[in-house]
Image (tube, rainbow, N blue to C red; front, side):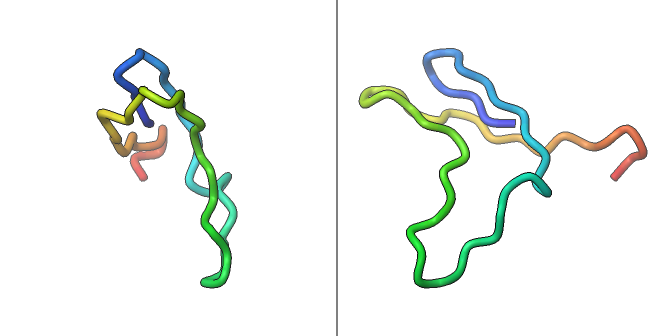
Length: 50
């Protein structure tokens, strides 16, 4: 789960983020505005305790 200072929140499973090679520029998980910053990142456990 990622939270921004503007109150934007996103929950996404890690399995949903694709693996990128070393020559790529990365994977965008959350687009922020020019003056918006991510202020919190938290790992949530699954229903089965993972």
